[in-house]
Amino acid sequence: MSVDRETIAVYDARAQDYADMVAGVEHPGLDAFLAALPKRAEVLDLGCGTGAMSRRMMDAGLRVDATDASAAMVELARQRDVPARQAVFADLDANGVYDGVWANFSLLHAPRADFPGHLAQVHRALKPGGHFHIGVKLGTGEKRDGIGRFYTYYAEDELDDYLNTAGFTPITRKKGEGRGLDGTKAPWIWVLSHG
Image (cartoon, rainbow, N blue to C red; front, side):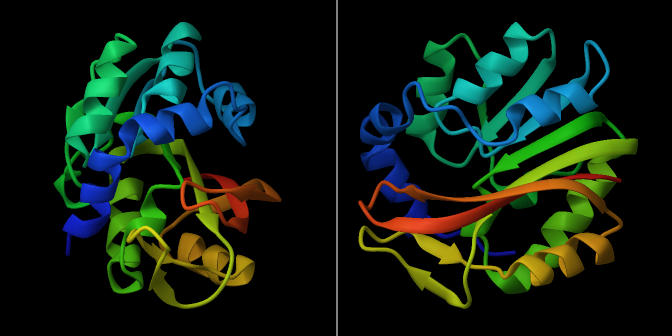
């Protein structure tokens, strides 16, 4: 599975800009994710970014394993007292460890060809019946944005097909639109599934 060094370099260079952009933003799906999990749940934040959502999960009593490919993002997360570590998607090798996996607008940076393998590994990493939150941008194809980050875009039914094939059952979803670090607005979707 490939690692896009250009995307990681953008996040390393623009980590503080990204932190400023998302400061105080209510992230889609977190309340539904928290409500689906048992108390003291073990959760993987896959692509934790600044650690803002990891911090909220920890404050809610969850035990969080926070990972990100960007060293600068990991450092920002650690400044929130989140015990984040640097790792890429392909490093995920856990089996039946997590009650939940939170992949909020992170796996969209993986090539489409690698996506089924990543979803299969997320499914393996979950305990039976565990919950998986994923956020992606809606659309078609793969391309770089105006600042060099690689994106794969998904149609809603296509995402459902990938999730079902990997063994997930979608249970709730929301669509919206937001402005990204590159300054452009894009439609997005998040889906909460159980394994």
